[in-house]
Amino acid sequence: MPPRHDRGSTLVELVMALSLFAMAAGGIYAFITTGGKSARLTNDFVQSQQQVRAGLDNVVDEIRWAQSVTAASGTSVTLLIPQSTPFSTSSPYTVTFTYDGGEDTLTRQVDPDAGGPLAAGAAQPVAFGVVQGNGADGAAFEYFDAAGTSLGTSPADLTAVARVRLTITTTSDQISRVFAGDAALRAR
Image (cartoon, rainbow, N blue to C red; front, side, top):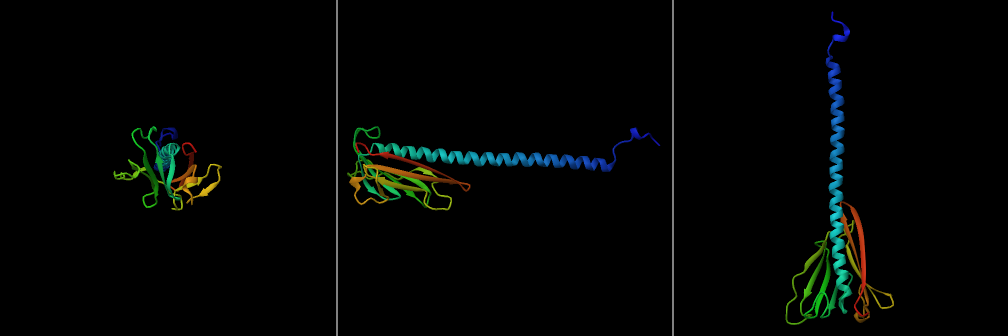
């Protein structure tokens, strides 16, 4: 009989070693898979937030140059932008921002000659994924007079509107983020 220190591994020892290795490899795989999924979800949400924030910033910038509100509701606003602004050097125009709940988007539509003979252009999305976590509307406009008093979401007197606030909610993988921006109309 050979000495005890010269013997090889038994089958039981080999099976136990392989089992421990498999458990360690499985744990590492689960950790990497979970980390990758988490990174993807975080990246998707950050991108969603960035594009909604960029859309909100564009809307607020255009509100700042508006001379007046020509139509207003809780989900849509139409603004008259005068000539000689960074947005229009040649002629005044109207722009309508509308929340489309069916598509979960905020759109921008321009009438290049403010109600003149030229037809309004097609509505173009400026923000996607605009929806609350419970599926409710993800965008809301609110209007204020020069004193800062709320005129609500459907002001009776459009000439009293001096400031517009837009609140946008974006939801991705059941995580919601709310953005708000407001601006006073030009010379108000």
